[in-house]
Amino acid sequence: MAGTTKVVFVFPGQGSQAVGMGKELYKNFHAAKEVFLEAEEALKTSLRLVCFSGPEEELKLTQNTQPAILTVSIAALRVLQSETDLAPYCVAGHSLGEYSALVSVGALAFKDAVRIVRERGRLMQEAVPAGEGSMAVALGLAAEEVQAICDRAAEGEIVAPANFNGGGQIVISGAKQAVVRAMVLARERGAKRVLELPVSAPFHCPLMAPAAEGLKRVLAEVEVKPFSVGVITNVEADLNLDHNRVKPLLVEQAVSPVRWEASVQRMEALGCERAIEIGPGKVLSGLIRRISPRLALSNIESPADLKKIAGN
Image (cartoon, rainbow, N blue to C red):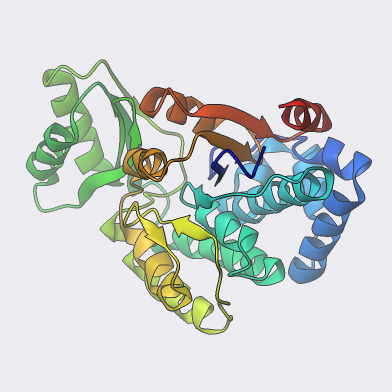
């Protein structure tokens, strides 16, 4: 199957977490258990407790969420690799998920990645004081319209598109009052829906510059190894195979929009016919379905999912 069909592995980002995630994989597969134990050794904390039992408020803290999702995603990947012969033609991840994608191709060691993303979460959280930043999603407007709305709403503050998720879904990010002004303008322009998001910081906009600087220092301490399976990056929505570009692209990712719609279109242009979402939830599957309906979709976050994938 893997030899004849071009498969892309995709990895979810923040917002896909749920209490209980990874528990069944941990209980049923040695490969998953090893990943959790490696993460706990690297972080010196009980990640299993946070993932399996919560509470949700604890799991939702950015510096917990990011290593937790990465760990569950890599646990699911290791199970998929140990139980099937599926191999990707290329990989991609949404925001945080790009780190999972880089681990999957061997560019980053898992123990390094889990430490990086915990620090990334902390840096993002601390970049903007609580309550001073916000994010919102607008449905049904074109990218150019959203950019124009942000430009008009800024009034000397920062507000910018943060995620081009596809299917008419665009997330904006920035200073709290500028985001509120942009929401009003988006409704006036005829957006189908405008909703403020329950996030702890304004991700993927220039307000994250302090986090990007901190991330640069964190990344300087780790090794990126050469890899042979291409990673479609958030920043460029194109295939990267140069290990020397990984760190600069990850730093830029912190302050730049996630170009998910263009990334999925690139997968299709590369001839990918099947996408497997690896990790908690089905957020990316829903987005991909709207962008490229021809891509066959499956996901793995539980033993039951593995049976379905193995049967395909």
